[in-house]
Picture 1 (tube, rainbow, N blue to C red):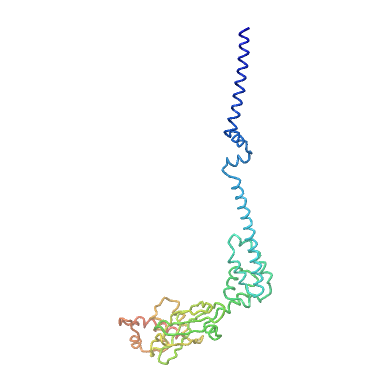
Picture 2: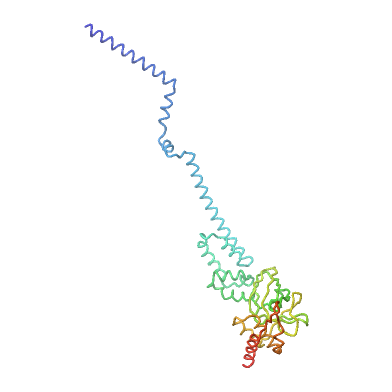
Length: 335
């Protein structure tokens, strides 16, 4: 009985101690803020996942904003291209000129060219039958058109129009589209300074046999020994030196202070045929010069051999060169 009584008291003591410990634990928790830590442990699952992936809600919002800005930029660029295309068409219709459309094409990035290629071709089709768009076109406009639209309905008229910008230098000079100064240089060269007086680039053809008449009666006239073409930009001076031969053995060789003016040999002038034959062969200027003198002045052999020397005193026209030049001229004369 005593044992049982003692056991009951012991249980009571244990309960008292347990209650005391629980009370002490509650006081400790409230003082140390452990309850706050436990509250933070129960944050929403979605925020916990963001923290685990290294992306915060703020970063996520920034990414979404960047995507919206990129989309808006694409829309803005597309609208700008569309607006530029409409402006180019309006300008082409009002000027009238094809250049605004060509400039629009040049401004396109390669990725968008195919998108507008069909629209551009449709635009040209709308202009069918209206020569107004070509009658005032420049050489650059026409060349661009012919290169990019070789099978267009306007190709024939564009080719005809292009001829107005590609002529003999004498024609351009007579039309006052090209002006300039021609001066001597040496026995086998002449200098041309040309100016374009139009609003389009011009191609000036210098045909074989183009004749340069000297202002002075004491200086030899000269003739072009090789045909060539020269591009003369708008409003600019260009200076070129062209191959030529002297035509009068008994006169002085031209210098840089001697002036010339343009002329042209008759089509049936035998000198043109001679120059054509010489241009087909890789002959030096000495043979060309000897042949021109022989045909024009027919001097004695000794006179020609003594007529031209290099700076070191060596004869430029040798016996062999004389025989070659004389034989060619005689052959042409006997035809």
